Image 1 (cartoon, one colour):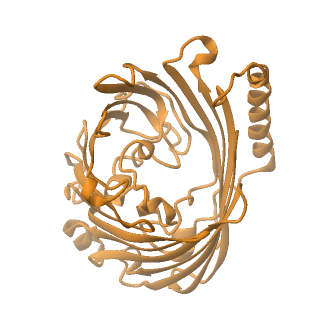
Image 2 (cartoon, helix red, strand yellow; image 1 turned 30 degrees about the vertical axis):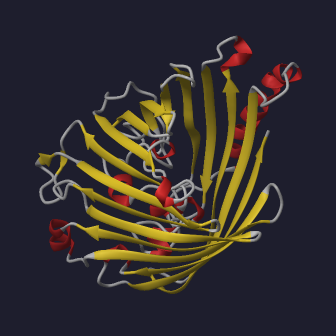
Length: 392
């Protein structure tokens, strides 16, 4: 069975690269005058590819290659005399077939770069520093096309892993009419952040409820947040010395401003809302771990509960990790679909930086009850990730 979605064309890639070249060429004169320290204009490029093979079970046997390319520019407003201002623009392209739908059969996603083939503007935002960093409360504001998961529900230790749920939890990441403002399509939003000298932090965000265009959900659209309803989210980050270096507690809550279709009756509506908690800890200088849990309103969300956890070991040039991601299906959805209670993914991974700009990462996952489907066998999935990264 072939994937009906069009593959990313070479012509589209050439257009994106040409645009990046124009952006870089335009800022070269500014680089010539930069002073010592961090450059005021910082272009960058990354490419991540996953070669994945389903060894047993799932929806189908076989191997595929998927990839994501990003080209971005960060600008310090000091180059134009606006030191409190900074900007970021990210162009993104994704290629490859439907890994989860066609081969693995899972719902959470064994790869965090898997998406329908597309190329578009992913992020474009401005950030203002509203108070001096020496103030008791440092306040910043950010507005534009924003990846919600770059500000909220960030699992710093879990970022090592390839599975999607170790980025943003599925009870949040699969909410809303087209998912929230996360990969692969961001929505317009405004984020206010307040940080104390003790590094405690409060974040408040308002995002447009619909990520993507009204006519094509795979295309970005810059609208005033709230035009199609709003996703309101808040998070408190509290560092805890007893949890080791970098350890802390993170608590968040979210709600859509407009009622969403119910899971048991799409002609009726109810509120879509949820909460999540994350604890990160360093056991020893080379051992780190985390636990994350989340709940969502069962009336409007198929995934009503989630628990994820893992440990990471720094072993010389390698980072080794073991993680678990378990997503519960709501009772009403289970009855409607005749499905199982939970999907669980176990992941064993290892990453090594071969050079300053290249990292390799062999990976093994075992998915229990893919998509909660009674007809699907547990899937054993092997993969290899290649990450290329360059930034000035």
